[in-house]
Length: 73
Image (spheres, rainbow, N blue to C red):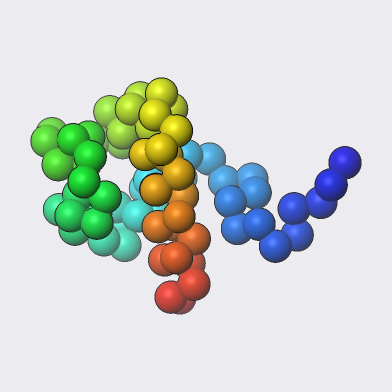
């Protein structure tokens, strides 16, 4: 088994990532940075999880923003 030493996403759940981004940016700015409906219209963690689990391109954008945001801290 390969170790995920430098992978900041290793062991992170999608709901934890979304909660972190919402706390850091807020729904409004998050919706501006990643323009998807679940962040802009009636945003919630639950609706975001549903959409992101079914949509790989959107999940990838969220994960990229998370890694970029971690680099700022």
